[in-house]
Image (spheres, one colour):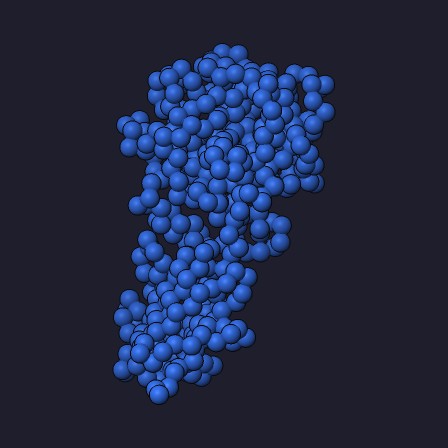
Length: 403
């Protein structure tokens, strides 16, 4: 009987047995949620000193987070010794030198190659999997019974996630926002850029902004601060995450939207979304006093490019004689998941040419920014360092062929 080789990714986990019919340096591991796994050169913590060509392939139902510490001789384009990582739909990333890095992806494969003339080195990587996001068990995105341009008044507190930005100096509601947690709302960057945030409040649970007695759920919170996307310019990356003072008190009439974790790359082309706002009822017209909602068709980016310089970061809407309008900016585009019936944030109202003018409107596509949103809220709540902006860019590159 031929011997078998026993290998493992994790030091404290059950060992994975491989047949010698396989390459002695090719490993396969199914990753379980919540457990840690490790990849390292066979000699670790000592240095490898010979030629290697090794592969570690992972299988997981959720996103894999990898943290690596490498001490691998540097070479031009890492042509000699290297540690490479790849996940489906993405280009391979190659690393060498003395470096720490992080990587996120699904069903990741790691390659380690060292040359015959290697000077020696070592590496250690830790892998963990995220638990799959389950909108069925997520306390978000509920909608209450039903009672803009071409729109109609919503029911009182029909959309518990709706919020508005109030300028206390001018005593007016000037932009929309969406509740994403007890501490945070998301809005358009142009709504808070160059604003004195000490004079801005976040209004939740309201319906008729001219009265104070139509709903007892209405409450105004002070603004603690806003994080504008670092690459915001004009209609590109027009998104900001704002933290309120204290915590938003949840109830059946006030609560968070579901973020599109399962729809990072979804363009929602052909879908119908709901735009909400207290904006103007027509271009240059009177302002709505009650929350308005309008159903809009999501059109392809190709059609939208006839009017705007849009990218995969955007979502465009167009329905004849129906539109969002001035002061609706920053408010949500909402989509009802047909399976779970939860309300999901698909976009943030950003820009348009007039209102209901026959030209599409441009919105910030929320799915492109869920990792960035998490990095901002995670940093502020737990003191953690922001996730790498490289991760943000890679997620968008990963969507290039899916939108």
